[in-house]
Structures are given as C-alpha cells and as structure tokens.
Length: 157
Image (cartoon, rainbow, N blue to C red; front, side):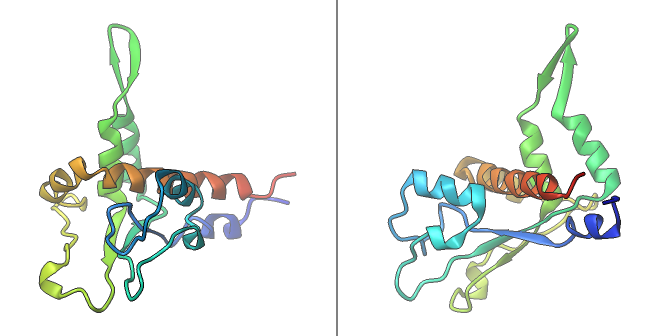
C-alpha cells in the first residue's frame, strides 16, 4: 500500500502521561511504572480510592521549524567527535508540553499553568522547577516510545 494522508494523520493529536510523582498513585513499583511508560496502559497502575491522577498532555507532532531546531540541539561536534547532548530532552518537552489535565477536586490555585514564551516553547522557569523531579525524563520516555510504536505500526509492503 502506498503512503497516504491517512499515514500522516496518525501523528496528529496528543499523548497523555501520568507521572510517578502523582499522589493519586497507590504503591506502584518502579518496575510497573516503567512498564506503564513503555505502553501508556493505565490499567497497569493502581490509584488511591477517590483519587484521580493529573495527566500531562504532549503534542505528538512538533512544528517543522521547531523540530529542525531540536534536531540541531541533539548533537554537538567537538574535536571531530559527535556527542549526544542530554539537554535536548528538556527542549523536546518544552516544544511538546501543551497542558495538564487536573481532576476537578484540585483547586485552581494549586494547579501548574503551562505558559509559553515568545518562541512558543514552555516557560524556562517552569522547566527549571520540573528538572530535578524526574518528570521531564518520564515525559520524554513516554512520548518517544509512543511515537516509535506508531512509526513501526505504519503498514509496509
């Protein structure tokens, strides 16, 4: 089958991720949480009674101009050697993070608001606050896995 517009539409939309720091999670082992990040199958997670998790919403597709800029952030050449730049992970999440879906019972005053800078990326101050929590890495793992699964699911003949 030829590559068609239907193939392109599979990369539209969003991915929703629950992070390990969410207080709605009930005794989820690191191994189980790691499995969840690989599948985004919420049935693998246990939640405390009466609690719902916050869902971090990421774009599946990044605008071409931002994607091109991100690709240039991945690798640095020094002394004739190519080196991966781990800071790229945060920049990709800055480009994809669009929302946080909170349960209704969380007061507005306690919610994190996703603000964008003039360049259309998430505010650096918020990223600085998130960095030591491990949330950025979890979001990156989940998005990377979801996108690679979709790419490999594209029918080929």
